[in-house]
Length: 463
Image (cartoon, rainbow, N blue to C red):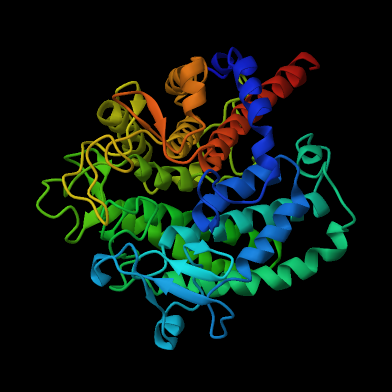
């Protein structure tokens, strides 16, 4: 199936983009009853805003976020532990020793008067995803300044200008962000307690903050890999070669470790190595939708520069990047995982975030089909769609796009934080801008594929 199968969705995807464009113009808060900045949510929202052309607002927000990085001198108090069984789910104030231990990390949440670390330690994904999106955005600005601007995507990036000279200010941005991201990389590197190149976490130190996941989590390794690969691209652009070589080595070590230690041949999927998680639930080997972030991270998300990937000249599809494969069997392994997750989590019309309901959650006991317990989340389904696009699983993308965007009731549900698969009703925050931005990023990817398809058709017709 070629990219032509996506063309029939142009109208409904354009309609979704037009109806949600208002959410790309606001502060990087998730929306609804969320009245602060969550790092992981902001990573998707800011990327959407940047591609939508709000370059300078995004720069201001990134500066604000990184100005709240944890360091020795804090002008805001830091609260931790609200989501941790170690503290009995009791919020506590960080003392100087803990602040020193957390130095370099970003908090879970930036409130007006204080910072919060939700669990016992800063979330791996909050810090890693912000490294990723910051590196990605600064790399795109570098390309705009230094590379060919004839690509028609650039006017989209930089269309809403204000009195700000990108070329003049770029060196200041680099001087501000690079040291902070290096400190953040160092913090995350220290989370590899046993030196096996896999980061460890305590319970609830990721986006699924009631699932009590503890140990080596595939999703968290994917976030770490995204940070390393995109930071490495930026360092190479800036000719910081020695550091880039070190970061590249870390990224390769992560891939090697995930492939060696986290693949389950029995489950045909990458599986979390849990330590004490899901206690007494018989869910120690549960499959999760967010493990797809590891596959997503393997292919450079170098939008719109596709120099690391080949384009199929017959239909404009993105071919597999040869550099992502651990060995000759890797491509087969990744496709088997995509097959498995489709078979096991595509239930009740939508993909579920976990294979089967959890029997134990915390700090809130959650019945099945509520919040993180066996529900559908638009934001992580956006990651699944982008991953399947990158692996050219276009039949599945066609099905998901049709299911999500064609039905009026489903389209309205996409504006909610999560959906109960039994009642098919949206729940949680509304409008939930994290999910909206994730799906908008999917649509940008679809448009990119179709644009490349049209370009190749033009090139062929002129020969």
